[in-house]
Length: 113
Length: 115
Image 1 (cartoon, each protein chain N blue to C red):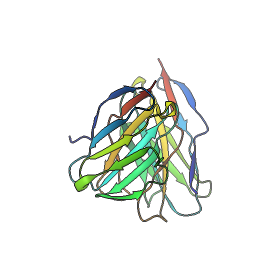
Image 2: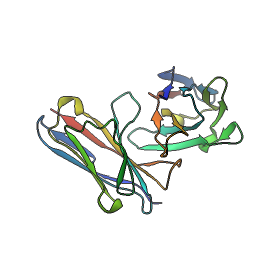
Image 3: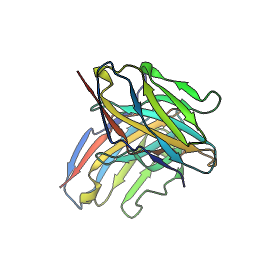
Image 4: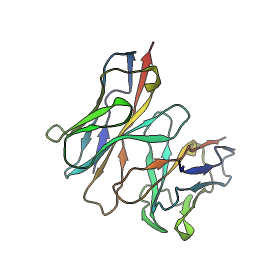
């Protein structure tokens, strides 16, 4: 069964450093999502792509976060510089289209020291 | 703006007992509703979803949920739980006003099944 791949699974960094997370969605899925999940809370949407275009990045802290999905396939989420409050699980999900089941990857757990 | 409330942050229940996890949403328009489950150290996976039609929706692993428009609720139920149902459960809502399917997740309910 196809799965959403994410790397790395764990990342420890010091504040003010740059970090990057990678996501490879299920083949053929047009929609890709990046969520942030703080311990004990539900996922919060950071950015949503439809193919290579951003359709929602209203909750993305654009002064330090950036996301791209070149060629409409895999995607990278970057944080520069990282802050202590960025410690969280970063989840990637994909879906075939709109109003459809989202398939989640295992996540990247970020710890900022 | 839409929002999701899951009043019970933690629900302990004995094995083979029934369980109901509550979900209420706030939206002024028609909605799509979802329940996702997150097992320890795993990603989220879909349990069930309501898009239209019958208000009683059946999902995987014996779970079902009922959409109640007048009460803006979408409670999740299972008649008899197993140890393996221990997980975090998230209710989610997507309204029909956006051209894309932005989904808002609730804070989650931690279900602990006691042997």
